[in-house]
Length: 111
Image (cartoon, rainbow, N blue to C red; front, side, top):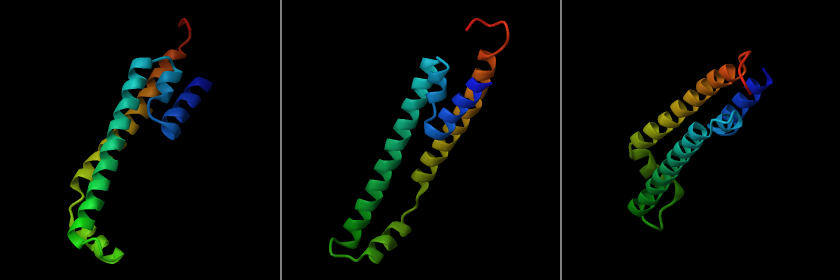
């Protein structure tokens, strides 16, 4: 039971995939970590491009309010998609690590 709790805490609170690595499912843990890293980089890049585009449109001498108006005028569709995928990946990782940890700790299984 302690393995289940530790694996879920690692996956849910630290990083999706760490609980899998803790349970020695290295491939799945590595894929989850790599996937979340790619999604995080995509979100950061999108946010940076949105901000830099708003600064260019508003002008370099624009006030903060003008830049925020430009950001608000742009649709955040890509960010919603990326954050939705991040949430679904995180949720999948938690559910999967619970399943893996429970099957790992079944009686009669060689550990």
